[in-house]
Image 1 (cartoon, rainbow, N blue to C red):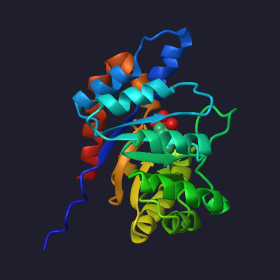
Image 2 (image 1 turned 45 degrees about the vertical axis):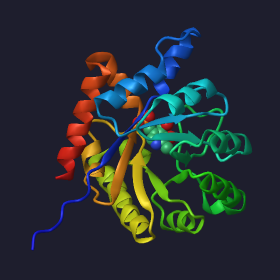
Image 3 (image 1 turned 135 degrees about the vertical axis):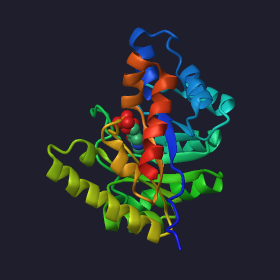
Length: 248
Ligand code: PXP
């Protein structure tokens, strides 16, 4: 009997930093929705956008347009606040990924501590599920966090790959990859769909894409930055080829 190949992996393209560039001049160019539609046309499997409390990149109107214009799944990243839950349940994107958010941070630092806030998370997750949204929790690859995510009724966990991506040397990277591998297997065992993301590039994505339980990668900063040199379609095609090759 031949061993079965892992299922194909999806690429979610995070377009936040198109909005960052637009907002630098306060106008309408470059339009993150236009970038999302181009990504869709090029083979992106989903679009991710993070509506932050301070609206530093994606804004409410961008999300409304993404929801109306995209035909591939929209994954809304958001803090687990009342304001964001209300927006999400009205907008009803395909998925919502709950992330920790601190106003002063440059980007999402570390996973959400789901264990430490089950009481506030449970009703919000239930409301989103009732609205037909697939709820994902962005967490570190920690067994207790994963088990709590399953108990809370999330459909998905997105494992934070930041510590892996930022590892200072090969030994540290191997340790972090081991944590991701163990976490992905444990999450799948708990009945959760496994996604991963943060800090992934052409150079470091393959070992994560090769983890058989990982069904989706969400990548933003590198893709948008590299698009300055190569153009968004070429960059998306190349990233898709790299992750597909890692899978086989
Ligand atoms: N996944 C989540 C939950 C995130 O918060 C981010 C950053 O916004 C990403 C993936 C993408 O990270 P990066 O921009 O480093 O590719």
